[in-house]
Length: 261
Image 1 (cartoon, rainbow, N blue to C red):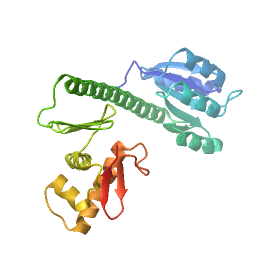
Image 2: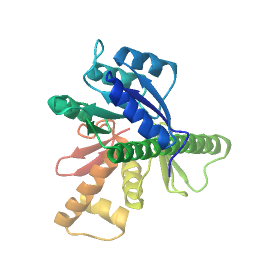
Image 3: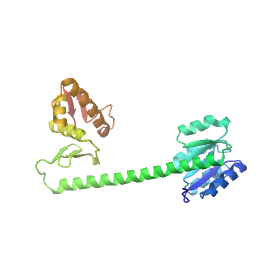
Image 4: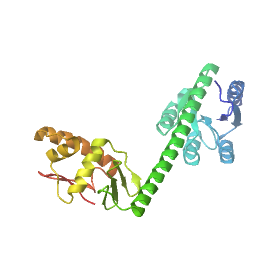
């Protein structure tokens, strides 16, 4: 089904190519504009936003590749489909590497044009939905952080519910943790490991003690080391700015791991 609100810009310096593409896509119900060269396309992209751009690489005085690189800075949301001849395939592949959605070899059949455009617009809608969801998640995380801070400041600690170490705040009742106001997306095992490390700081905790604390059973040392190594690796990815050079969860040779706030 065609999304009639979708807008498309065709940038090609060959009049017959523009005519065919515009005719095919308008019949599908899309809103279609054309640009006779790269400079014309750039002017139109600066005046309004488009969902999809069909871009010829071989144009003068502004080449399609130059325009493509400018577009990446101007509008990161637009989907770009490259129009190319066999002689410019290297440039098309380079454009794909830099983020173009796909390419069409000229001359392309109407069915292939419709198919590529439909797939590109589907990808564009997925990107928009992903961005909206990310924005909603960030708003929810901010709200949760504000609620946690409000609870901490207005109510006294109950039964040691909250545990704080530097910028880390652990709510043991809800089994949640926030680092400098950012909610950490932890599994139950990761939360238990973090809780154990913070409670024992500044003393290191052995792998066997961490397994006992996080999973509730005693494991042989080799098994404990492997289990903890994996979970610590995942935990560092969620906490550390640079997991390869950890600031918070440090490895203490022959002793285990240490929480350092």
